[in-house]
Length: 405
Image (cartoon, rainbow, N blue to C red; front, top):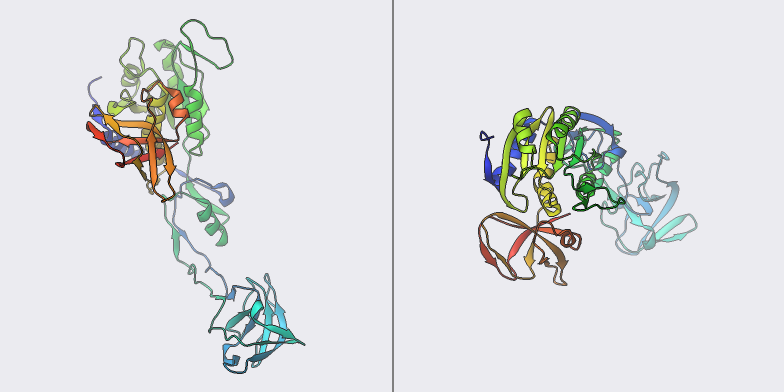
C-alpha cells in the first residue's frame, strides 16, 4: 500500500480528484427542458429564433407613426383598429392613424412608435396627446435580446431556472445534459444502530447515513443507501464490489483510518486502485480516494463533521468533474466576527454562522466546538470556514472563504 500519494496537501488532493473525475466523465442524455433543473449542459445551445421573435409593444397604449407627432398644439390621431397579443390583426397604420395595442402584441405595419395609454385622451374614435414620445418609444425590437443563430449557452454550464426559461423562450423542449452519477452510500462499523431501535452497550445511532444522503440530494442526485457494513472484511468486500460494479460512485463513512478494524484501505489496494490516502486537512485527514470496478471510490472518515467537510470539498469536486461542470461553484468570503488561533499546519474547516450587517458586509462567527465528533456545532451552524495551510492567529476582520451547507 505504498505506491500512491499519502499525506498530501489539500490542493494536491483536489487536483487528483478533478483529474480522475475528468478522465471518467459520464455520457450525456436528452431530457425535457422542464425536467433539466440543476443539470449540467452537455452541448452548445444556439438560438433557433430571435428574441423577441418580432417587433412588439412594451406597454399598453397606441401604435403610431412618429412622423405624425406634432410638437406644438398637440397631436390627434384616428383609431383604425386594435392589436392584441397572440395574433396579427393585419393592420397597416397610415398617415394620421393609430391602433390600440397591448403589451407584447406585434407592432402593426407602418407603425414605429408606441405612446402609453396614460399619456393620451381618447375621444370619439381618436386620441389626442400633448406629450411627444421619442421615436421608437416603448417598442421591443426583434432580436434585441438574442439574435437568431447566436450561442446563448455553453457545455459545462449549470442549468439554472433563468437558463431553462431562456431555453423555453427559444422553443427548445429538450436539452442534452450530462448524465447524473449514480451513487451508493455505505456506513461502516459494528457499533451502528438504526434510529428507533434500542442502543446496546457501546453502540451509537447511525447519523452519517442521513447526513450524507441529504448532502447528495442537495446536489440533485438520488443516492442509494446500502446496509451498514460490519467490521468484517469477508463481508465488506462482496458488498462493495457489487455496488462498485453497478454504480458510478461509491461513498463510505468510516473504516479508513489506521485502526485495527479499518479495513477499507487494504481492501481498495488489493481489489482496486488507490489514488491517495490521507490528506493534510482538519477534519478529514484519513480521506481515501480511488477506483473500484467501474466506480470512483471515496472513503470518508467516520466522524460526522469529517463527513461534512470532506464531502463538501472533495465529494462535490468529484461529482462536478464526472458531469463535466465547467463553471466554478460560486465563492463567498466573509470577515471573521471573532478571533481564532490556528495551531497546526493543516488546511482546516471550521463550522460557523454567516451574518450580514446593515452595511452589507458579510461576517462569520466561528463555532467554538471544533472537534470533528461534535455534531451539534454543525447543526447550529450554516457554513464551513476554510483556513489555508499554516499555523497563525486570525484577528477580527480577517477575511476567510466560507462554504454553505
